[in-house]
Length: 120
Image (cartoon, rainbow, N blue to C red):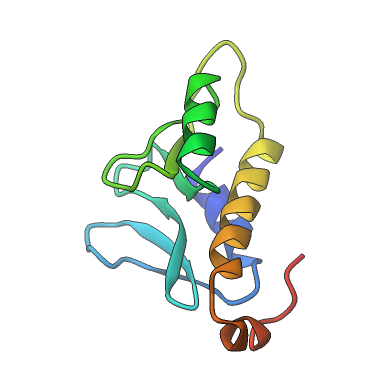
């Protein structure tokens, strides 16, 4: 897993755009101005939104993610390096990114959602 892989996956999502809102080399992926994924300047992993604080806590507890620095507790960071006894697969990374995108997209106003291409 890498920043390049995250960028490739996110770039394929309808309406997704990348920016560096804080400067210094961050990749903040947004849909209609709302962030759904972020790779920090140091590139240690990707932070993604989960459905709620409980979901984030569960992922952290089972060793599939860590607390996302500087983000709300409903966000987790999926590290690029080995996290525990089992590596996080490319497919699991893709699933986390898609889930985060869908959560954020679903909260957009209906008019904004209608203006986006259909999601996968």
